[in-house]
Image 1: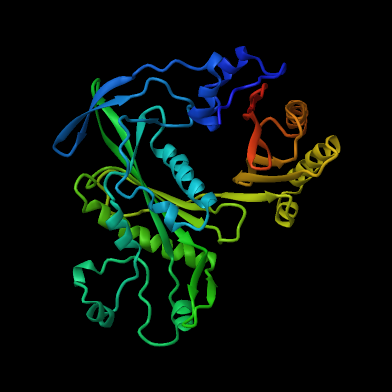
Image 2 (image 1 turned 45 degrees about the vertical axis):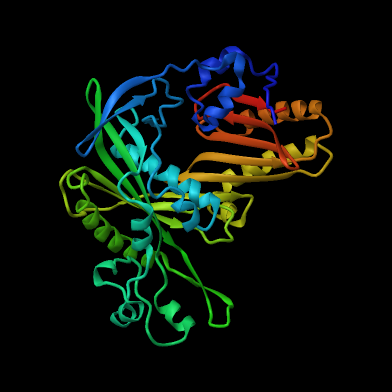
Length: 407
């Protein structure tokens, strides 16, 4: 379906040009829709990329849509484990947060203005799958006719005796997924090399399994156990990475992620990160990551962040007063160090004409500016059944919102 922009009187093309650098969340596709104000892309800067003994020509894009994002070396090189995370994690919410959150944490060690991003090139799908397996007992090695050198699973072995329920309760699967990001740095005017690696380890908060009769069961894993096992796995992962050609001496960041249960409507979160110096083979210390998502409205949000809960409920009430038909309004808030940083709101409403969409979007834009403090980034997605209708983005510390109406 072809989409074009209808920019209301509140949103002028002149301020879109000023704001577009700040609006990383919109992505490249949204900007391309604004043909009248679209940025012009140059081919970029040609460089030589060193990978082992090979040299390959690459291009660094000149244009960056946001200081919060890395520029990506072109042509795009997919990871050997591409798509692995999607199959490993419970929900799409966890997939998105695992990937973008790892990049956010890596930027503390590898700043976006100094480093370039490339998908992981050192861990392929076969290696990741083997690492995610359970360790085999000696009896299991014999039964499966497996070579000892292939017994490299990072999850605990399951007992040879007992019922399936007993064995899974005793030894749940802790490690759910492994994600690699590579960060390149310019060494000369025309060359780049690997400057660092970030590894995300996604850990289960719930282990799912089935009984011998096929009945689904689950085991909840306590936070202290997740942390203990995650740090133990990270130590072994670092040891293995140092034995991979090309990773023997580069700085490595390892971050631990607690993924949410399958039924969750919010993603999990990172809870610990460590930065390993160039050439080091040990993890000296871990830094706590205080991040968490809350659903609005919810009892948890009311209990732990009542002021934000009240602001959201007031916003919700005003939206519902505007339109006589039923509206569904749900928010997802990201808290960093117990401070609300970003609020994403989804509004689903039946529209019967484009003028309704325009009027409703204008009204909601005003509410966003009035109801939420300017230190919060607010994204509002307005949709009718089956299709998006409009988008409102108010970046933190920015006086003017971006509004886009689809048609």
